[in-house]
Amino acid sequence: MDTLTVGQLFLDVVFAGLGHSPRPGEEAWTTDFGWGPGGIANMAVVSARLGASTAISAVVGDDPLSTLCAGLLEREGIDTSGLHTVAGWALPVTASLGFDGDRALVTGGTPAPRDLGEILGADVRPRVAIVHVDDTTHDVVRPLVDRGTKVFADLGWDDSGAWDTTILDGLDGCYAFVPNDGEAMAFTRTDTPEHALEALATRVPLSVVTLGARGVLALDAETGERVHVEAVPVDAVDVTGAGDVFVGALAVASLTGWTLRERVDFAALAAAITVSRPGGAGTAPTRAGLVRWLDEHPSAADPARFAFVRDAVP
Image (cartoon, one colour):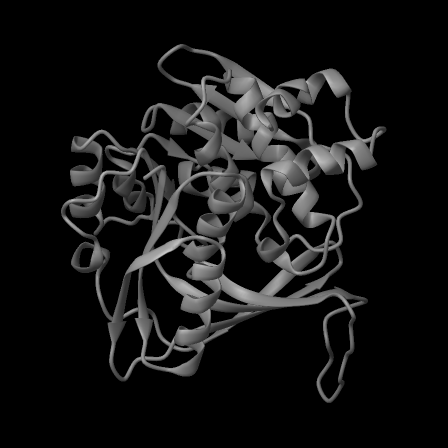
């Protein structure tokens, strides 16, 4: 197995292209709409579409939406044998409302009633894993690391606004952490993305900070290599799931012998293509779709920059 994703599963319903936040009493229509498995499933779908053998480990309920999501994941070629059914629990639903170049999220339901350590098989040996981590998931991360897995950490949004730095203890043993600039600065109590990157490099071998339209910063703490990759210029239609697509693509890129810059470029390209389409992470491209998009948008990027992508696609 190339990639394993472990964490909270949702059903995502994505509304993009809204002119503004809906007002009380108002009904807003948009043709930029999509739906499908969300949360940790976003990374699994991206990984599978980019050619990696992929499995998912998460809790599902005995409700119709859980059945629907499991079926959709199977259609993507994802191994769903790690989905654990809990009777009486229903899959949470997240609505994403996109306007003003960003999105707001509303989730209905309750978090999964099982800890990640309870659902992860003891014999799984993926080459890379993407895990929703916190200060309680050491017993999930450490066994994976001990079996030779590179773990990419996903911490998620802190809706309390506290950005408790002890949550970073969950990064212990992880290979990479990929927050956006706001999250990185909040967690590290720093005032610039560059300072946040350096602070995170003391915790993980590969620290990456995404900057939206300003690109991506990455630092390999083991070699000292640092890169600032420019964003791929696109007209952003829907930024829902952009970070998830980036992480999933970066994890797949880590399975190659590419340079740090090439790995980050690969992930940036996949994320840029996704945000140029309505529907969130469910519109992530396949590996062949990356080349097709480059052919259709010759002015969007320097051809030399992505020559390695063409070489990697049969």
